[in-house]
Length: 125
Image 1 (cartoon, rainbow, N blue to C red):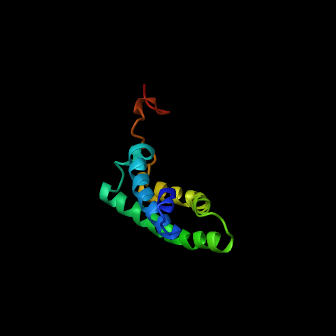
Image 2 (cartoon, rainbow, N blue to C red):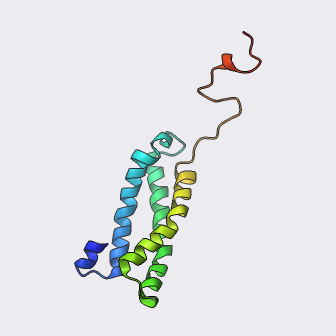
Image 3 (cartoon, rainbow, N blue to C red):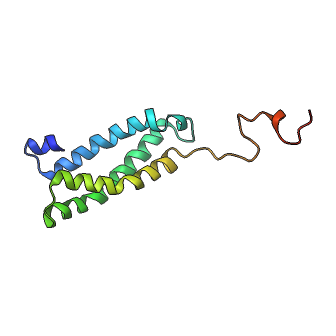
């Protein structure tokens, strides 16, 4: 966003462009590092990407009026205002991505894959 502002872009245009780059970059990083252990879950890569990108675009649109309010009405600098709106939305984004996009498989009682049945209580020796 800062580079676009320095090049003379309007702060709303810069915020939207920066959000799009960030959404794609964050998805790729989450896919590789944060939720790598959940990739074999219920969703395919295209489905995870679609859900993540769609949610994050809606979330960015919800944040946009708050960005304008902070900049136009309260006189907060555009970059700081963007950082504030992102910080506030962080928890909601993480919860959505972790619980919907990378939703873990439900664990069935007594069906733990790593459990050794011979170690169970009451098992015959």
